[in-house]
Image (cartoon, rainbow, N blue to C red; front, side):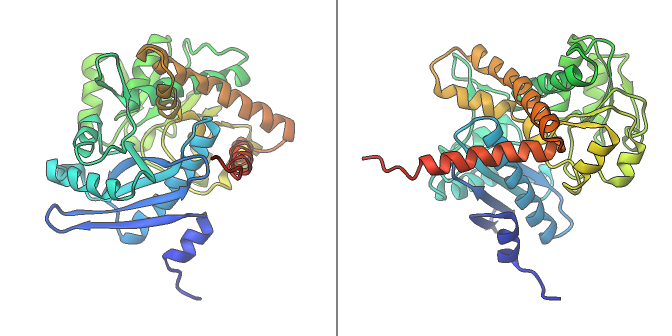
Length: 358
């Protein structure tokens, strides 16, 4: 069998550009993948993870950037899909490291726009922004950057509500048992929103400090070990940690009627969406449920107060509702329905952009 190279994978996933980054002085090693820029410049998070090897980092960049193309399209945003994956652990970050990344991003001339993701936050984004104008932020009236993960969590909340409306006949989350896997950037905010809604979250995380912060805030919060989260008896499973955690074995263990989270590319294989569909488990595609920040950032182009831009993330309710309705109409999985809707919009706008402007 022929050994596959980067170009083979780019052709398989449909990528336009893959950039490998290396800076000896700061220790920066990473990949920026640009999947599709039909709708606009590629937008994507900056993720730091200890990948076991170069191929793992590459495949993550390719999968996640493709997911961002669908996310931007389904959100109705004028963005394409991209991703920056950095090889290492968050403790490698410092001013020079982040500014070096900013220089690489600036060198792409606006083809890639970054925001914070797993292992990075708004403080890191501020450092990156010292070297590039191409960062995606939502600011309040005082110019302060609003936490992107909070907008994502707020959109996710409304995506979960849309799922509940289909499965339980009402969008109320009161007394619903919801397993939240990962209480980092997005998960911690989701827990806040769930408790405000009267839900009963059960949480887990591999990071004890993240758990402790939630416990300090809510002393009676239910906590389980990371590997036990799949077995708890819940209404909803919300993965908000890393990608690819759901495989066939995990599906057999789940007791939830709904899967809706913010973790990108949560299915190990997209064909698993068909298994979930046949089992009657409602799967809300993560590129739809996690698009709250993209919606809020897109609305920043319109002159309106910051609170209204943030509130626009609740449009995820309509997006997920439309996906479910289309899925039922076509008798296909929700993943396939969401992808078809996203690809249809990309195709239509591609035709429009053939019109020359003078």
